[in-house]
Amino acid sequence: MLVTRIAGEAIGLIVDDFHESIDVIQKPLGGVLGALSVYSGSALMGNGSVLMVLNVKEML
Image (tube, rainbow, N blue to C red; front, top):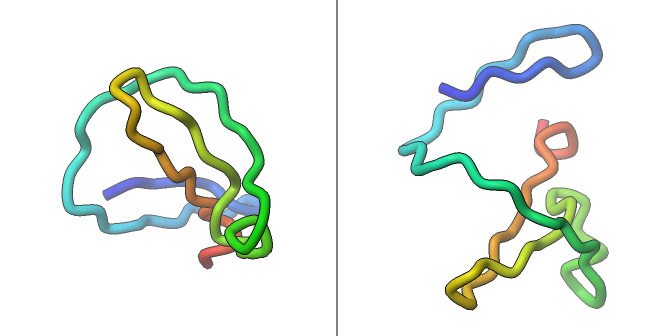
């Protein structure tokens, strides 16, 4: 479970798995995906894959 605090209220999200903790530079999304508020941005990983960053506040 991932626990976060939004507007002073603790919220728990059930997740399948936690892999690792990494530092990334997040870039804003453009185009069609930029219009979706559930994504806060993306990051290019060292192996060339793209990490999509979710906006938990907008999901709830």
